[in-house]
Image 1 (cartoon, rainbow, N blue to C red):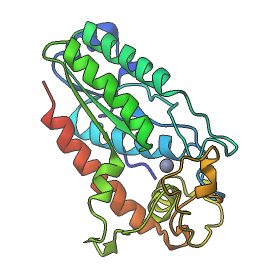
Image 2 (tube, rainbow, N blue to C red):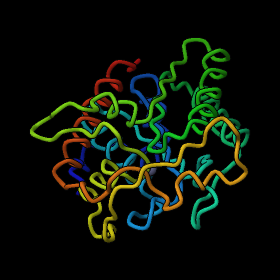
Image 3 (tube, protein in one colour):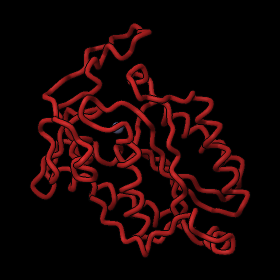
Image 4 (tube, protein in one colour):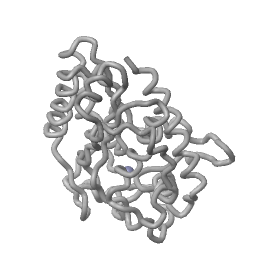
Length: 248
Ligand SMILES: [Zn+2]
């Protein structure tokens, strides 16, 4: 369920050019990043899009930050051979992100937070490289990059508001299932039981999906709406702090 104050949410797509021009030098801008990717037999392909948009919108409404249209495509590796996964190349993602950042800087935007619901290693590296290039190129331009999962995995093993944050969890596991139960319960199918990944070892495989044959890691059957709400709130609080920190 979304609890965003729509009256306070500033979407770049809804601003006039004069409003954009004024906000450019005064506010943090936020680029949510998602991906279309399989999330096991129980979660929708847009899981990472829904998660990123929900936490970004709520945090941005709180801080008055400007939300850019979501980048709905990303890079994935071990999941890309499953139906529904669309992986754009590392260079494509780096280049696309770089172009967006350059255009923001060209129109006087001073600071941008990129928040990715998908945390694949190649995906994050491509975006980070673009960010590093952009801050080198544009003097005084600030770029922050994180996946909200960076925040949430930091709480692994801790108990927050009566909910224990799982220690061993992964793609489409307990936490992601809980978050989609909270945000879009109507899209969650019957939750399967625990499945841990096969160890890939050091030898690179041409069929990386073998490491997660059912498309998920962790125990979706342990997910609850309440855990999802706790995770959502932790992510929103951390993002709101970050958006304030980078405000020009
Ligand atoms: Zn995901």
